[in-house]
Image (cartoon, rainbow, N blue to C red; front, side, top):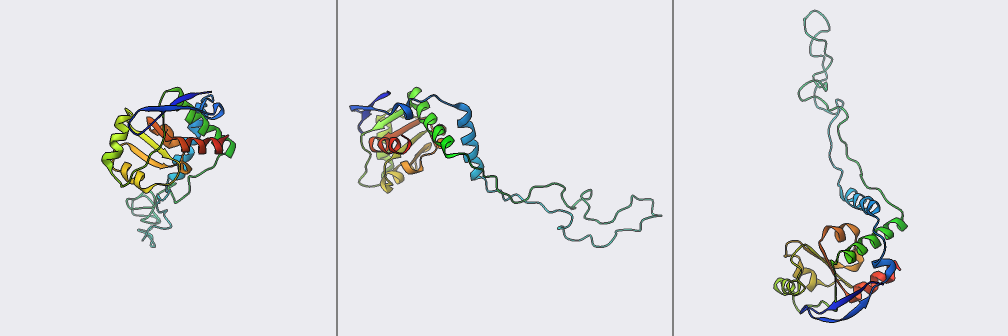
Length: 207
């Protein structure tokens, strides 16, 4: 069972936490992580790219010249795909790129992502994270006390406007409640800073 120290906002160790071995000590399934990240990015695509076919391009109602006798190649419309400003053949049209994966696979991928952070020593457990007012400087100081100098994901147990506003102006730092936790953001950030209460909620959901 993985055991990690618990830190306060000053960076001092104030205890230890025993993590659920099934969630934070699982084998890392890289192929499954790849599939879930692909799904996440595909679901974010807007799919609004669009082109016009020869039937949709304006103009071209009249045959440009007679069929025979001009010496030129026969042509039926000036909006042929072969012509400049003509229609587009097999061009993109608005569509949805989204797809889904089984819930069991998504849960397993989340366990793999969290376990990878533990294996690499990039998971930091905070006793509590609260601010009286939104202060970017206060959040930066907390991260500095925890020796976090790279991209970091800060996960709290409940939505907290003070915490989110304090983190949003720091480059590479993202903060949200545990309900928004996803594989893509866990893997995208170098460090995962999570409160003790948020760990309990993760274990409650994934256990």
